[in-house]
Image (cartoon, rainbow, N blue to C red):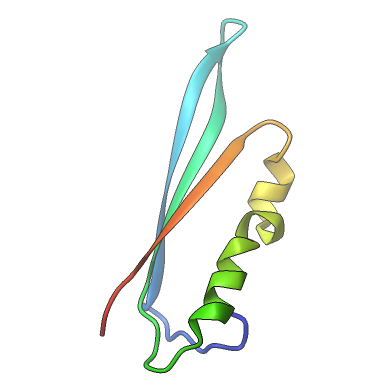
Length: 80
């Protein structure tokens, strides 16, 4: 993440999709992604915040679905 080494297991995410009926067909209309990140001591939070701010623009799934699915994301930083 922008030059900050985050060991395996220190970043995880959950995603939840919302399906709605559109013209009598059930379609995916929204994806909410929640990240949980344990940053190493001394990590530059500004770099992390910039990386997260560009998340949707650089995510292959979000870019593929951007014209038909709404995306939202949140993040929780875990101590330790």
